[in-house]
Image 1: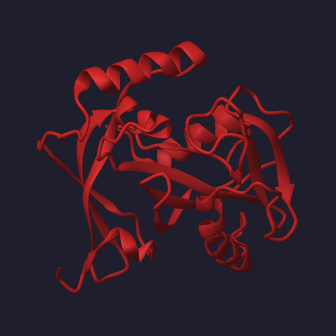
Image 2: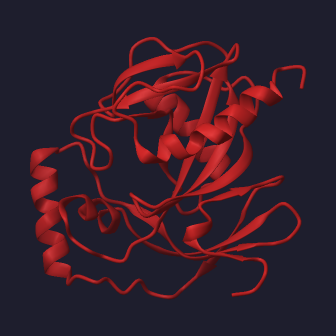
Length: 230
C-alpha cells in the first residue's frame, strides 16, 4: 500500500475538494451464489414491497491524492447485493453512499429510520443519506435525497467535507455540508419515522454506528458556520 492509498481501517478522510470516481468494468464476484441472493431478496421485498432494486456502485479501492482529495475506484452492481447482507447473506459488497450534515441555525437535521429499513432499522442518524447512483454526481444525489427523504431545500450547494468508512454496514460514505432553507415538517415518505433538529451533538438512542462516527464531522461543520454569506 502506497503512502496515499487508504484502507477501510482509516475510516475518516477529510476532504478539501470532491472525491473523484474512476469507473472500472471489473465484475463483482459475490461470496454467495445468485440463487441465494435472489431468494433472500424476494423474502425482503415480500416483507417490504417498497424496496426496489437498481444500479449502484461497488467500491474496489480508495486512494488519497495528497492534495486534499481522494480517488474512489468503483464498478457497477445492483442494490440487492448490499441489501441482503442485512439478513445474513455474505456478498463481499462494499457500497458507496452519500450523506449530509444538513443544518439550520446551528442545529443538525437528524432522522429516525423506519422499522422496515434494510440497514439500521429504527436507529437515529444524520439525515438524509442514500446510495450514490451511477451517472449522478454525489452532490446532486444528496440534494435529491434531501428533497425525497426530508422535503427541504438546500440554502447553498452541498460541499463535500469528508469520506467515511462505515465498518458495520460495509459502505464508504461521501459526507456533505448542507445549510438548509427551513427545518422540515413531518417525514415525506416511509424511510424516516421521525425528523428533528439536534441542538448539540448527542443523538437520541439508538444511534447508528455511522452517525456516531459522523459526530466529529458535524462538530467541524457547525463550527465552520457555513451560511448564505459564506
